Image (cartoon, rainbow, N blue to C red; front, side):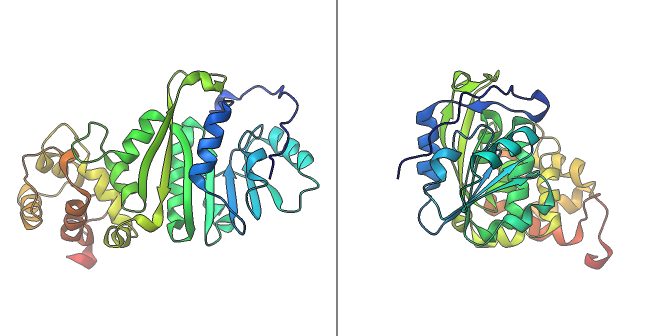
Amino acid sequence: MNPEPPPPRDRRTARKELGQHFLTHERDVHRIIETLGPGPGDTVLEIGPGPGALTRHLVSRCDRLLLLEKDTRFVLDLRERFRDHSRVEVIAGDATDPALARWITPGIRVVGNLPYNVGTAIVLNLLRFRDRLARVVVMLQQEVAERIVATPGHRARGALSLRVQARTGVSLRFRVPPDHFVPPPAIWSAVVDMNPSAADPVAAEAAGHPSFDALAQALFAQPRKTVVNSLMAGTRLPRDRVLKALAAVPIDPGIRPSLVTQEAFVALWRELGPEWSHDGDRNPAGS
């Protein structure tokens, strides 16, 4: 099916406080949609459709299209534009809000050119519902995208890498230069493809516990220090307790946090997580 015709040239200016940069490059649009892979019977949630660069192609590619938009200007525009499309629903809302849960139905596909200032928060909010997600394909600032997909030893690896990769398979599909947007941002962007069904089930189960994310943050409390020193700073646990946990995995206490693998981190969490709370104090239930 042919896409919807493009809307009249948009006269709305991007709002800096919302981190808006509108994608204008048609080839990028097609690559994003092909990565998402919507088809008959699918429900798609588009986050931040704005002027509708992705939207006009998506409307003919899925059974139901939900458009979640925070900017009231575009909410009104989209409702007018798709008023005769019974399969399209325009939602005024914020993708960082826990209320997002009501729109995440089993098997849904999620896509969006995410605002730079809240992209990480949106990804983490979406992954709270990982069991319902078929696919997530989002545009982020390149630095964040690289942190999400970073493998052990990569300079960008950090707590975000561990938190996301425990919940979903991830890959960086392609990078997008500033001049493919209006207004052009100061930095490059990148498209990340997330497939929750490809996540390691052991890591995904561990990530369901609040102490998992807290320990990931603690591991990278001092990322340029050794693992033992960074963990001591992040957890406020005594050195002998941290060394005991590292030896049990085992993890070399002298390496940097970025070298810790996902498998090793899950094992470390099993050693420390049940007895350690987010504020670094011992959990009485686990003592």
